[in-house]
Image: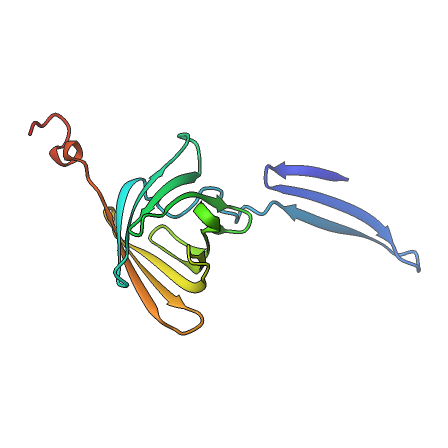
Length: 183
């Protein structure tokens, strides 16, 4: 016999008889795994951001949610070398990973796999195919300093070189004034 105890637990009782005729009851409990974080724990970086890197490059990126109930973003990247990329960022609750894939012209792309994700910090790896055809794979850590500032560190897996990045939210003049204020 079996019964649903609550939405996360089902109990089954089995009467069994061994080869000597002795009977016993076995109780089995099935529990739903509720450990999967359904919503992404990372606080999404929405709006316009300026990225400056220690290697002298920079980018402008705008992330938006396509719908209010979406747990993924679309990013539009404009790199300082003139390349443009479109990115899809999403949370995979069953794997507890945040994945980002971006593509540009001439096969250029980057793919990021964050396998340690919390509200203020993520880490994982990134693979980049640059416009010149070079592939780079790095370990990456992003850490939110505050709502307008995020720091990143990429460590190249081949030579150990480090590139740091600073993501700064671009605040529009209307946002700086606040509601109901005039210039």
